[in-house]
Image (cartoon, rainbow, N blue to C red; front, side, top):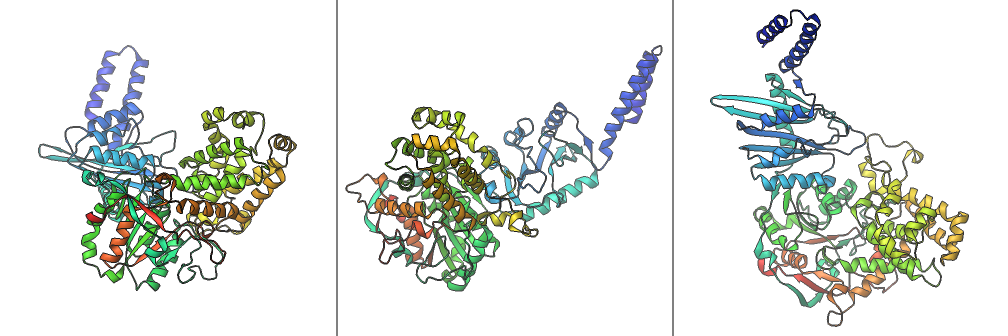
Length: 640
């Protein structure tokens, strides 16, 4: 190469012998090119400078000689770490993965939270790539400190030409949002280092992600309404644990004397439940877990796995596809419980059933199942919100009630998760505040006027704009409160309560209460039938309860929700539409009954639902757990 450059220099000198400046410019360009090309000898490789250059390199790397590709891809959102952005889903650089049929193709998706990763667009892109390229194998690796581990976005390309085999590393070190510094490495020692790094990371990752084929036969199982009814308490013999973490049958507290509550997705929840299982269920070490949420149930499953249990999980969520990850089947069909059981049956055959425990979620898994009749739960909650609204709108206001329905429906979307935290208490109090236009101002009133619901319905994106302040606080770092404490850096906890950032919901309530006290809002309230003093009291009580770490901070709403849900549960299918009745999910009910009665596997029910929304504190009061419910949906009993 040096000889060729010298020849080029002499040729230019000869052609431009009378032009010294041209010769000097050419010599500088050749010197720069030689310096860049010499990068192939360096351990950090040849650094690319333009997107077009990267495209050219990728075109060659994905050429006909490519026989093997191994790559890492990052999706990090931990505010303490550099923000990695995967280049494999880049429109320019990532297309080749799903379009090239390569002999051997493996990708490791690196994330800081498997629970969060599963629901991202990035993960769905990976599933799409797997679907279009059956030779692609994908693993998930969870890393809290990728920078400290020396992990980067890189790809190992192996080419085969005649009898020659060559290895190329395409490396994208710590990227930011504006640039993508990449290099092409051929140095033998560097290639070995990257190959060893990839192998170590893959060995530390979970199982290969697999997509399940559609089972047309299961999809065609007819939906039926069973003649029989049953109750949750009866099936589980009251071996039920609600958000308060007390066993219903024995009143045993998993928290002991601790005055706190723990959400399902927190590591502490798995620690407490796991300890209880080992203590009260004969040392069961294999769990079958059935639920409906990627965050709560998926998080609980993975955390129980990390506590030494062999856990086979089934999560039915309408946003998911049929994918198997780390012994968890994510799907959008309850009938896939049949496929799930077939997948784990070999393992169960080698187990002592006394060492196996089946764990079932309740809300929208056993009753009001997603995709079957989940609307009844939302209907009960909206009714409870409107009843609570009546305490701050004397005489009632249909326009405010209608506005509340629209707001609640919007808040139920994933984009509001940083504020609502999948907590119905939070959704309810936010809905009440916004339905009463606590932030009433000239521009905000224009968007949320209670006498112009049609206009409001078409401008719901304005709600996101209004709440963006509360969605964006610590966007890439979890806020501190009891329900998110597990996501903090436990090695360096805040020294005092004052050091901890306030939860988004607390900031929202502070601003809402402050706005209510303004003269402008007083005038608005007087013209719209709102009692600002009563509204302030409701918001302040919830804010105080959040500060006190109470499991159900909006107990007034939760109690009304319980009564409304029981009213729906007591309706008879003969006299009411099935979609207006709280029903048991035929598929999950069949599976729980099969495991318990046929395989003699004990059952335990777990629910993130607060006691206030489930059980009446009054002696002899009604409980949702004891109500006999209609069994409705696709029966899988004959398929198990």
